[in-house]
Length: 127
Image (cartoon, rainbow, N blue to C red; front, top):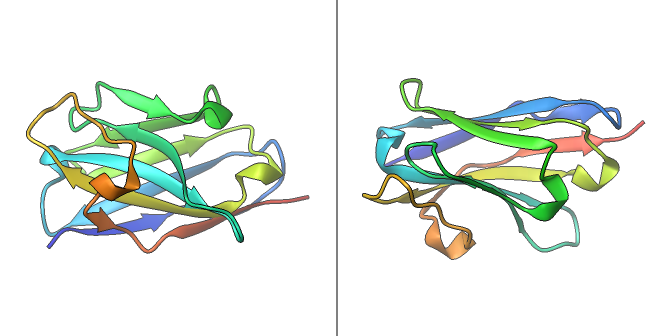
């Protein structure tokens, strides 16, 4: 069973940065595309970013383009989400999720494509 654990969340001032980590155990992440999602209170879950198994293809929701960067280190079995220029609108619980695929260039944008989910880490952007 693949297990995902997010970390790196916290309280940050507007304009600040955080780096979230998604550490996997149980299986290697080599064959899993990873998605980052977030959900704020009273709002629907939103896709933030996705990355293919090789890391060569990425995808971002428009609201974070140019500010967030997703990357992965398969040797460390970890995926990262670097978040810069944070705004209060980025406040949410952030989740990583994994979807098995044999294809190194695929990523998935729909939450329903993901089988494994972490427990989430809270990001609060406030002055």
